[in-house]
Length: 196
Image (cartoon, rainbow, N blue to C red):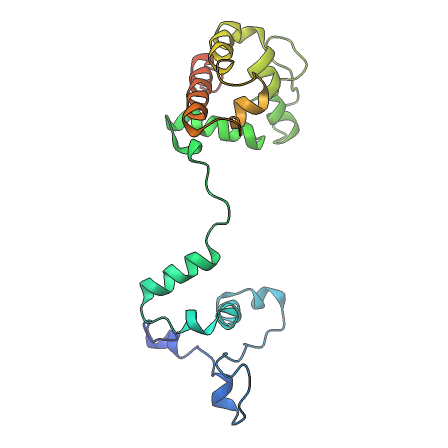
């Protein structure tokens, strides 16, 4: 909008700079005059929030000559601080979704359906255990004893067999070893048939 790369009706919405309203040499002369707002809702709407965000950028970023270089500077300045865990993107999509749902507490495990989602009246497992939660499903449920044996055999080659390792991998292991753990957890999820 500032560089007139948008339609005219949007360019006309851009407020004046302080330097256009005052003859004094002031510190914020390159800033745009904030749009007056009376409500919090309006202050968070597009134009007022963009003017505020633009004024908070350094002059060097504002004066970037091309859109691509501007985007690059914004990514460097405001890009993700935490790297995305690459383990979330390996293997088949279905068990990856199920594992993410288990981590977030919104899976089809009856304890999640009971305590977090409030859609069932009873958190008990079909094996008659009082709570079908992630710890019970992965570590104790007798219905999945054979599948768990395979899961335990592979995971214990690399790390301790506990719920944290199953859900997130181990910080002490490399990406390659953690990816083996993730794949075997996916195999467990698929072979139990619990989420189909």
